[in-house]
Length: 394
Ligand code: HGY
Ligand code: MN
Ligand code: MN
Ligand code: MN
Image (cartoon, rainbow, N blue to C red):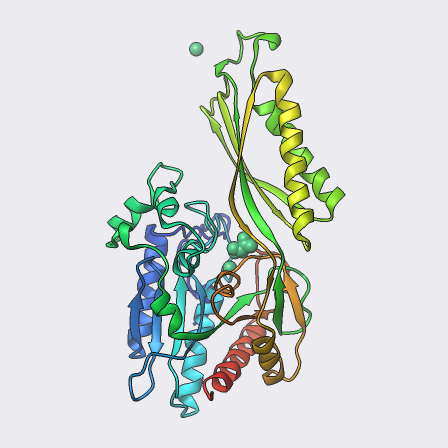
């Protein structure tokens, strides 16, 4: 039972996965999760935000002081097989190993599946864990829309949830003593089977709206045009140059062109910027440079530029005591930062959190080439089993 055996939402032509929150593919994964939980007599719980939890309760049925592991089931468009599912598949395997050893939990051990971690449908990464931990205004979340204009509130309602009930669940958080997420490593930094995260670098998403004037591609002279595609094009180059200048990384991976006709000058272009880097102010400078460049480029084309921060996470230094305890349990494994955001990073604002990484020999992620060798996946399960066994001892 490995992540790639979760062939749900896989595009046979590209090998990429499309599992956006609350779409049939992700719902199928949710059903798989609940089935795996029930097959193990785990106590299943949904919070109001669509996050799922499967609890292995101690004999006395107590729910407090729990150790939580898990990850997410959703993907980016055309994502890899392991980003998210490896953490959940490994968690079920680790519980099986603990049971195989005859361990009976002194504290609840839970497996979490957090909703909309990639933000691929509604635009905000880690939406489920941000709602749970109070890191996003529920009213803002309700109004988030997907590519078809459906609001998050609508979609949650259709999924059987009360959109007015989304938001922080301090009672649930108070029951969790720590969260340890296993995840495929998403770079080339790990050259051993398993590593431990030290930090998540600052990262965020910004939306740029370029508004011009739609017109005919053949009958409109150059001097009559207000073409938003031109300042947009400048913005993409400016993002790369600003990243080089500031020692960060910047990406424009998603745009929306209206109306999108070959023979129509666009009326608007929306572009999303993803910027990250080891230092907070360098990321901020990168984004500021891009915004300035976009405005300068827009002026001669009489195009307006609107700019909004969609989400931003400052540096996450994982809980040192928990991290050191895990590293000790694993007998000294590499400790490394990551440029990828995770629910563990969001939850670390509210409770001790840590991450285990499993080596990815391709170093590629958010693409079909993402991979983890079977032996390394097994090493990840063994590491998670050892960590959970240690943490549930008190
Ligand atoms: O985008 C990220 O960093 C993560 O994979 N969600
Ligand atoms: Mn991801
Ligand atoms: Mn992930
Ligand atoms: Mn025509």
